[in-house]
Amino acid sequence: MAADTLRVGITCYPSVGGSGVLATALGEDLAARGHDVHFIAYERPFRLPSDAPRLHFHPVAINDYELFRFPDYTLPLSVRMAEVSRDHRLDVLHVHYAVPHATAAILARAMLPPGQQPRVVTTLHGTDTTLLGHDAGYAPAIKHALTSSDAVTAVSESLKRETQRVLDFDGPIELIHNFFAP
Image (tube, rainbow, N blue to C red; front, side, top):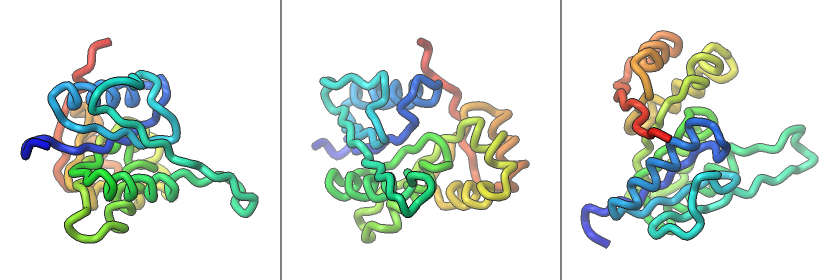
């Protein structure tokens, strides 16, 4: 593998929504530029081709134990992220949404020994701030995930400002507008 080739893990919601489309398009573009891209999610993103070179999919198994009232996704996701990071020597975990994806990535990184810990890049989407950021049960976890990320991006200037205000977050947020045109 060339020295400038990155090994990137991407986690997004695999559904038809905009963030999944954006994350998949980003992964395809990175793969077309020669990087190895590993999608980690509970199902294959609907736009992710199954036969494209340098694009890989790693499913997350979600168990429904009677002990828990609701199935947990964050912990199995973090374990899968750690496994894929270790097994494929990922350089970066790029996650779309702070909850649950960035929180899982931060935990995954902490599970790995120094030298095997990927950088975590969190891309914020509106729900992180406009809905969950106002919820006392989520806001501290979101702020922790952002503070613990190596880089944070937002898709609009208004989302960047709202995140800074609502979460009292003073870390840098890089503005990267959505680049994908359907």
